[in-house]
Structures are given as structure tokens and as C-alpha cells.
Image (cartoon, rainbow, N blue to C red; front, side, top):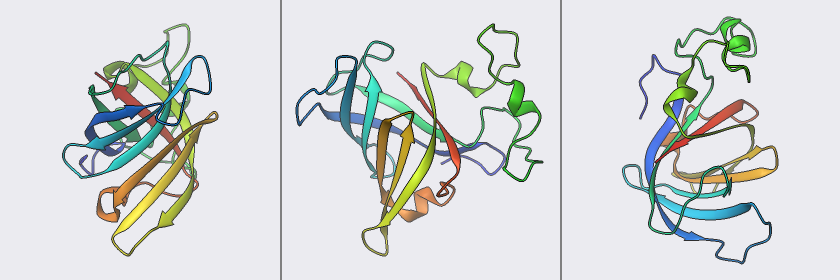
Length: 156
């Protein structure tokens, strides 16, 4: 798990158990099911197959972050800093954030939390219509907050 002096709110290594188990619905999007190596978490995730090709059995590093800034400062009521506004720019002139360390990045929002049991919870997030569900012990998701914007970061 990430340290307190970091914007990473969850991280682990996942192994893909299946892709498009219920059939492929879109040309460039697939849905994967994966299980984590360290925290015993299950995930379902929609991803762009052209930008980040994956296959069953692949391992990937997965992180959720509250900001792309390398500095964990929060000054604004919404949890952002002035630095956050200049972290990523398409022309490459912005400051370099943690996205530089990853191959695939999406921005979204945590829209739902389900408590299956007292110990097991599921967090749901949407990244511009690409959906994620992350299920496991609430202890590993204490920093994932309902309604908060979040960055999904993945690398091989």
C-alpha cells in the first residue's frame, strides 16, 4: 500500500483471469477480470485495447491516485493544488507528474460503494464511460472516497 506522503491511494499487481468473458461488445474496448497478488482483491475493468493491449494471464501494476502531482500537498477544498492544474498538458510543457511512470492513465470518479459484508466492500468508478469495480477488504480501500475524482494508472 502507498505511504501517507503520497497521492497513491491504492496499488497492487494484478493477474488477468479473463477478458471479455461475456462477449465483446465494442471494437476498441474490452472488459477484464483480474485478481491481485498482494491484497486479495478482485477487479473488473473496461480498457482501451488499442492503447493498452492485454491478454489473459498478463500481469500489470495497477494504482489509483488522488492527484498526478508528485507532491502530496492539498490546499484547495476539493483536494487539488495549483500545481495539479499544470501537471498534464498535451503539448508536453507542463510539470511532470506520476503519469510519466505509467503506460496507461485514465481520469474518473468514484460513484458508488457497496458493503457486501462488514469486511468486504466494492468500489465503483467511471472513467468517461469505461467502468471499474474493485472488490476486497475495506482496509485496503480506506483512502478511496465516494464522490472523489481519481486517476487510474497502469503499467506492464
